[in-house]
Length: 318
Image 1 (spheres, rainbow, N blue to C red):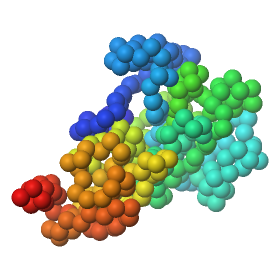
Image 2 (image 1 turned 45 degrees about the horizontal axis):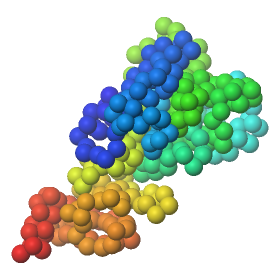
Image 3 (image 1 turned 30 degrees about the vertical axis):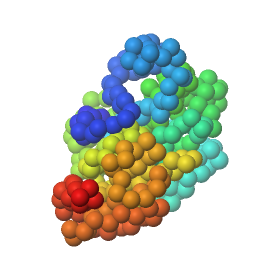
């Protein structure tokens, strides 16, 4: 979280991003419950003069809880209590396919989220994850039609609502839960909250790379959801892709010195060289500047992008 916050702090953005670390998670989620029910409404009222949090377009909250442990040993991933293989296959067929194909390796991060029209957290996160390198570190998606905590508890799915995201779901706020499954993977089945849950176990190259990929994916998701301005998006992204929501489209690419900006309908006119108010792509290659609309190019090489952009604008004004 601190790494994502450090990198996100360099961005100018239209939307507010809040980083918070909850305490008392083991005591009925008291920290996140207070935040969702008490602190957040007061913050929105004082900062944005709204009386109800539903009056604003809240994208939602990414909740990180036990995200470090990666284990690619066969059979290292266990199923939560109350869930059978048939239930996993029925409820989450994509996750079950990963588990079955990989012989139940603990080689993925769980992404648990609601699928209502108000949830917009999963698409940018998954797209960012798929664009990054190191495919050995996977993401298993758990889309839920219902995020009613009491409903899930009635079906003995308590492990799905065991973390702070439940506090947001209880207050009708969208939240996506990232977890390595805690005590259902590898040595954590015995070491979870025990002395053997220590740095010697956790600080391995695989675990750090696994966590690093999550940090990168979260950073790019925030970059999209926060609607950053025309500055160059720093970071690494291994492929070009688009995210569409109704009439809104954003394109990201930032690797190997290729830069593509995300654009939306409220984009500042000074950011545009040509094209309509739509999907606009900007790339510069070998001291040449290329602009195109409604298309995706994968072109490498972008020396001194801002200087080139400023020069072109100057030439246009002369």
